[in-house]
Image (cartoon, rainbow, N blue to C red; front, side):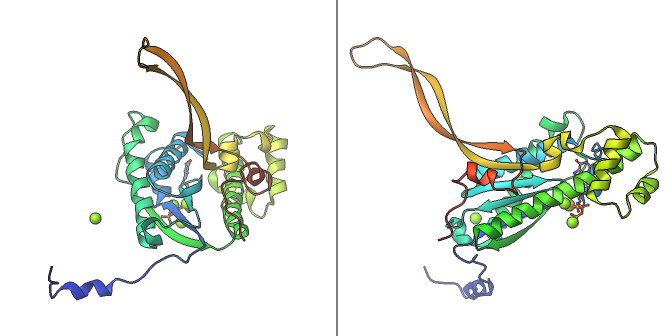
Amino acid sequence: MAKSKFEYVRNFETDDTCLRNCYIVVRLDGRNFHKFAEQHKFTKPNDNRALGLMTRSARSVMEELEDIVIAYGQSDEFSFVFKRTSTWFKRRASKLMTHVASQFSSSYVFYWKEFFGEQPLLYPPGFDGRVVLYPSNRNLKDYLSWRQADCHINNLYNTVFWTLVQKGGLTTAQAEDRLKGTLAADKNEILFAEFDINYNNESPLHRKGTTLIWEKRDETVIKRMKLPNEEEKEVPVTRSRRKVQAYHCDIIGDQFWEEHTDILEDDS
Ligand code: DGT
Ligand code: MG
Ligand code: MG
Ligand code: MG
Ligand code: MG
């Protein structure tokens, strides 16, 4: 077919192919969730409905898009890691990022009711996205460690802050003052000495965030089968199926990676 005289505009598109051999990380973050959380009456410091909905939406991203090997989420953010050899959408950053963001956003709205019941969604939420490339397993693990450390630091702070307010009767301004300049050990001590709370016994979902990976599970189903010259009968059939599995564990240390050696490819 002859090309139209307008065809040249294609050449204005810029190349955004992600460098080969690198893990492609897409991180989403809720837009203005400070306000979104207020308006939808999220419980403080953590709302399990909101966290559940984030994880449900991330699961949908993993199931619908190709080549995501691990995802990590906390607060209003989720990171998705595409395997380093992925050729999905010719590794075009804009395609990968927008597919992740739109699949996540539409899932967030689609599954809202499963987590919030009759409480209405007041306006359409949005998520920003960015793409970052990591060339080595060390860099990728450090990236995920950075996000989990962020989860820990924020959750420890928020836990003490809201305990001081909700159980200690302080105003938010007083709680903020009280925590100024305190280190992690001081915060642990406030919780333990004044409120009999051992931070390490707090929910792993809140302390560690959520890690999603693919796992093979043997699944046995009963099938009705009809063989030639035989009666129809019920036979158990076992199949290996890939399922997205959620963990709320430490991913900074080596143990998680030693137990799940199939997530990352060798650096060599
Ligand atoms: P942004 O990302 O620059 O558009 O602005 P924000 O407001 O989304 O800021 P960000 O992403 O740094 O912080 C996340 C906000 O979401 C933070 O204000 C607390 C809120 N949030 C996230 N999860 C929860 C939750 O479980 N409960 C409550 N109450 N708030 C939450
Ligand atoms: Mg922000
Ligand atoms: Mg945000
Ligand atoms: Mg955030
Ligand atoms: Mg199209």
